[in-house]
Image (cartoon, rainbow over all chains, first blue to last red):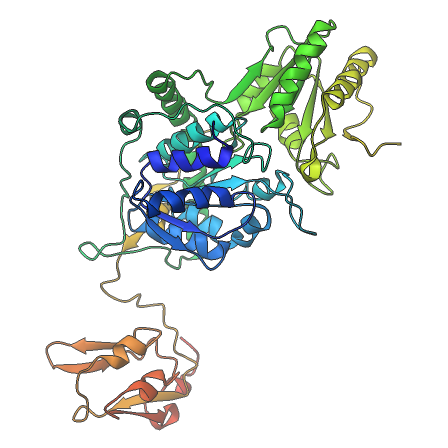
Length: 390
Length: 109
């Protein structure tokens, strides 16, 4: 039985990370506590560096990755935003380091509860990013992300995200694989041009403005390659470790669903229980859980919802002033569905903010609204702030 | 939706470039210098403290002449090398004193 944090640490240990940089912030801190224990008693042979802050953390692992080491760090909440400056250099410099994020609501004031806004706010920085829903998936995502990120055609850093507390601190059954299996799945990291005295190179030089656009284009072109690398990696993962992951989405009872939820992270587990309840009452509900936010599985989402009549994204993050005046999943969801011949009705529900629980009753309320939308054949509201309505 | 960067606009992977073995001839950044270091080669002990202390790598060792060489293109006249030299081999002189002083330029490069 492992919590999400312990599972992440196991994943990092199995990946034989070489450099770890820590800085304490709840709830991700438990990952570093686990890793520190492993390094101290010889279970893991890695350089364990105490950063002076989250900005230093990402800078340190960037340097380590530039020198050719498999590097690992992590943070939560405002720690994630404190390191913000370094995210683009890490992605643009093509350093496949990994950052574990156990979500925490952004200040003000200090709220340990989980909200996805911390990591979501970095989604434009050019990293791979996705949420796990169980401790098992946290461990699996740790390994899959190193494999995809370190692929010679990709070379991108990765955010491996999990809900703070709900996933990071609540234990569940985890199958910890053998090191031999991991070595079969994950080859050693080979930096193409590491910092070295034998073959000196310059990383992060000054460029002219006319060189900026080609750099952006090359990075965008790389993201077009990521999906096939993900597919191959997940296929190998399923084969070697006996899992059954879809590369992009977890689809639950979608075959005949008339209404559906679009939800990421640990609250999806409650959603599935709610769907079972709703189905027993005769409503054909389903769920799609994206396992990646970057690259966004546009095509797969469109296909998954093509036959659904009404979809609701469940937002555990905020995008104040955004197009739908709610969260941020709904914008990319609607964009994914726009080209469908027959578009489902789309709405969104703000739930679980601040680290609140999302109750079965909340999911049933959402189902009630979705059913109403299907009957009326229209969307009344684009966002519902559950618990804060008149 | 393929993306194709034209060959003449390609940039190296991750902007990683071979380490500088020369200088960017056009990238001169010293035109605001008003004071420059002057070296007394007799006093100089070739300790390389100036090389280590310069923020812009303006001091290098000329192997052939066995003397420290100063780079006028990047020196901004911060005088750190002058303060750090343990042999008192470096002193500060006004840029105006020199025929090729950057303050005498008609236009800044």
